[in-house]
Image (cartoon, rainbow, N blue to C red; front, top):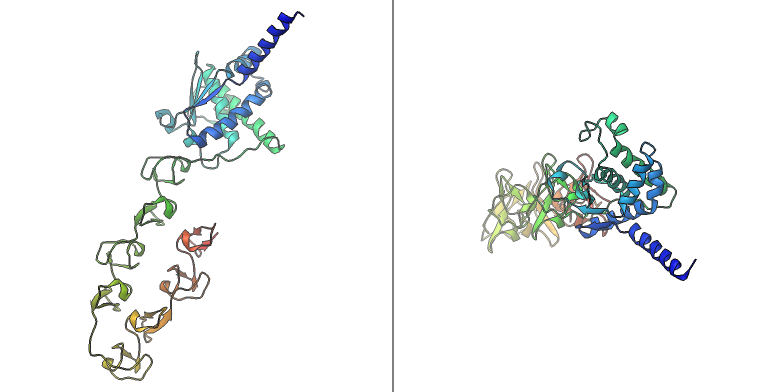
Length: 383
């Protein structure tokens, strides 16, 4: 062969090599682009082996798939109306395009799922005829429709490679960018990775704004609410209040420190907690001293002939006053660690006592790297 002929052959080979990797992934956020690129690379490396299994197509059709692959454009089109009920769609013709609805993939999907959809939609781009009922497939449609067969064969091939250790079929990274309250159909679409009732909701306290926590009612959607409402403000749950005490729809005091200067927190057996001015001219007997009248005690409370606490300020540092039915008030230690024995929420550092053990209430109650699990049945726990 002449020198000129050898150069020409080399240019042809180089051109073929360049065209073989000419498909493009466009218009995707970073995480989806990384996943889609890995799936497309797998298809590019194994295209001939995958297409060889499409024995239900003619040789001409199989070669057309390989030929058109090199000029395919793969786009992310999650905002398109077609993505409401589909993982992808396609356009044929000179500018062949496969449109992927990345955030419509169910949670737990992997790269081989992407391979399946790419090959399925590529069939649409080639103009192959679909079986009636394609958009609402039955088992018959899935087994006989060209596009479904192409996709499932590609997925099976991908999973076989993964099982053999020659491909890392990782779970999709997700990273949805939809904010709280935005419509969704899958967890993967949401920045919080939690879709509930057709909208993105919080899953952790960090999903909420400053001064808010993520609340997870058993029979309703998760929601963010304030954790710093003042005494007297409307509330629906203890943690919405700065005092961590919500009674009858209102934030009330829990400790004397929740009240204005010169007032103490009264915690009656019936009725709401409330702040009132501290009484003057009280007695001098300490806690546990014998008594007959309230006025004899420093705490101004005599029960069962013994001076007992009336409010937290009557107790030593690190303790609070417990007002129980049928027994005298008593001071008990607060701030118990997870796993310590308890009989009341406020004894625990986490403010959560279940089955006489201090348990987590929020993620930040747990050791680093663990989260607080709050099952409907069983105790809260860190894992």
